[in-house]
Image (cartoon, rainbow, N blue to C red; front, side):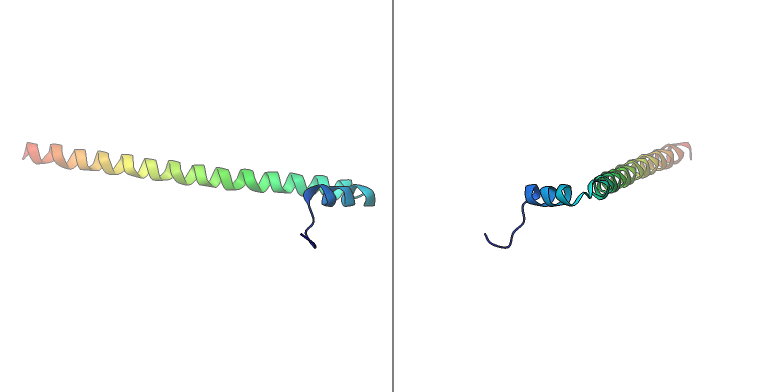
Length: 69
C-alpha cells in the first residue's frame, strides 16, 4: 500500500517537527466537536420524546372531554 500514511507515521512526523501544540489543539478541537455532535443528537432525541409525550397528553385530554359531553 504505497502512498498511505498511517496514524503512527503522521504522529511521528508531527513530533519530529515540534508541532505538539498543533497536535494538542487538533485533538482538543476534535474532541469538542464530537461532544457537540453527541449533545445535539441527545437534545434532538429528548425533544422528540417530549413532543411524543405532549401529543399523548393532548389525545388523552380529547378522549376525556368526549366523555364529558
